Amino acid sequence: MGRSAFVTVIVSARALLREGLWRILGAADFEITAAASSLDEAMGSLSTEDRLILLIVDVNSGQPDIIGQIRSFKQQHPTARIALLAEQDQLSPTTVVAAFRGGADAYFLKPNPETLLKSLELVMLGETILPPEALSLFLDRYDRSVESEGAARGEQPAEAEMPGGGSPRLSAREQCILRDLIEGYSNKMIARRNDIAEATVKVHVKAILRKIRVNNRTQAAIWGMNHRSFAGLSSERTVPPSMPPLANIAKRLEGKDHSARA
Image (cartoon, rainbow, N blue to C red; front, side):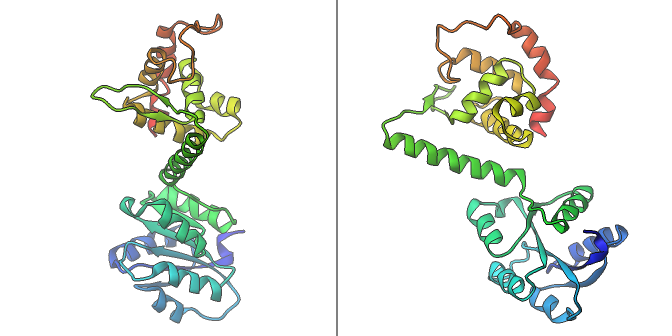
């Protein structure tokens, strides 16, 4: 479904942001019918013509009950597509879930213009957009839930002592991906081996780096080799015959560090 099928409405209490969005979207041939400081104002300016609506809302404006207003808008315009713009400090599983339950179709965290335009195209095609940061939060919550269920069954999560104390925990999926990092697999190969999306692999890799407090995939692979039980490897397990020496693994992984941090 093309841009011509939609009329675009911009809502933000920040005049500078409204003006910036108007120029960016207008230059990309979006048909902008209103740019308002509040959702109530925007709803009052909409005509009743039979056109699909793309509503872009800046949720940083401090408007009270913005989710309730979005829910009301969605009830009045059920075919509308709604994209929310937010700040990093507003990102939490509770906030994101409430937004999507209220009718949102996308949740952006300060996207650059090119990313914003491409994402809005997907939204207009009926796709749901969730920021990678939110996915990481949901995965962490899921991991904690799985660990709690395992603890209820008497299972113990993998642990390893860290410099300065503390015992980081990796989920079963993260242990599996750490083993793949040790063996030098790329994100694409890891995704195929685990039957998950490559974007999901990137999220897991970032979580692993954060939990074990290293900066890149090479360091994670070396750390995993030094903490075999933490990676789900027995201390007696030897390096598979097909596995290249660790020095070669490091060279292969060095070229992938950027994608892990991207």
